[in-house]
Length: 100
Image (cartoon, rainbow, N blue to C red; front, side, top):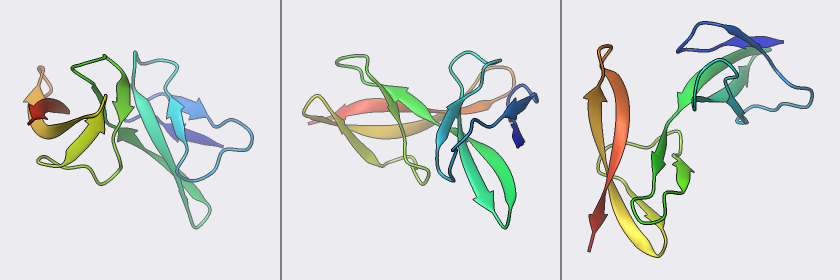
């Protein structure tokens, strides 16, 4: 079983025991994580968005339904997600900002 990375386009072999909802790092892309889904016997992948905690630099994988304005917690603090388009391909990215 394979899925295609949405960023580099390469086919990625799914490891044994993979289940729908698992996260898989693309071996060809630096730091891209894919969320694996199975529906009716067909496997697919979507990008799993990540942000870094501004306080401790921990990398947090966001829930699938994350959207701008949502709050996340790390290090006992709350951060609001903002959504920015960046780079030449206008790739979607999330950013965090501290909420007092």
